[in-house]
Image (cartoon, rainbow, N blue to C red; front, side, top):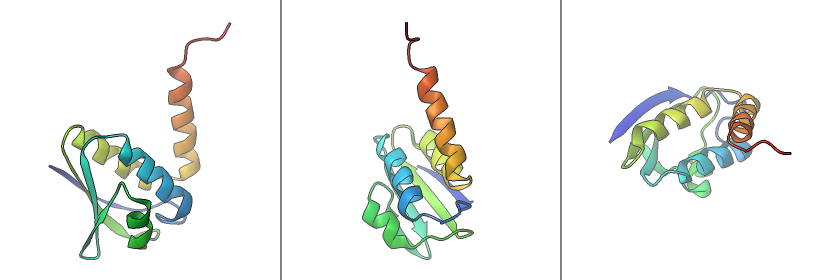
Length: 104
């Protein structure tokens, strides 16, 4: 099990677009992922769970991952909520471009 506490710095917290990206990233890994916030536990692979948490900018959350890739996922999710989503999207697009073969 790997745990990481972080402050949410995305402009809108974990609502709408940021929540979608958070859940999509969490679903890429086979491990179990939870968000601990205000004494409650939320499923980080569920849009309803993440949106239902009502996490706003500057709130502190704990991300708990258990299973294969737990540390990598925990760190990636923490990085995601600590930055501007536009910057994160650019990084993801760059990674995808680097992994594609050159076009003729």
